Length: 105
Image 1: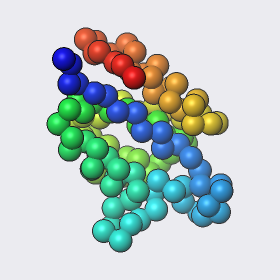
Image 2 (image 1 turned 180 degrees about the vertical axis):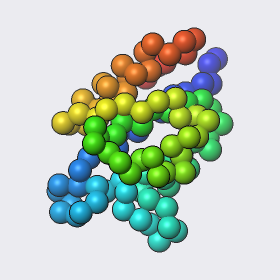
Image 3 (image 1 turned 120 degrees about the vertical axis):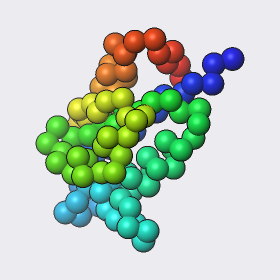
Image 4 (image 1 turned 60 degrees about the vertical axis):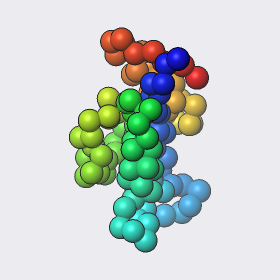
């Protein structure tokens, strides 16, 4: 049985519905981490997750400040789309050419 899993994190929203200056994924939690960093910290510590693609907005300048921007399990970033499914599709397309990965749903 293959226990290798790959993670796609759609994080390209602009916070329009929240009516905030910063997108939701970059809001700080009480522990000082952003929502995105806390998500990545939790999920990338799972042994079975072997790699991750984060879909971010095309004009995103915040992710490079993330403690996880250079994480060993971060395989790539993808350009997010107008809707979540566009971002997920973009991330899947980014994973597709990576060698010797078994990707499943």
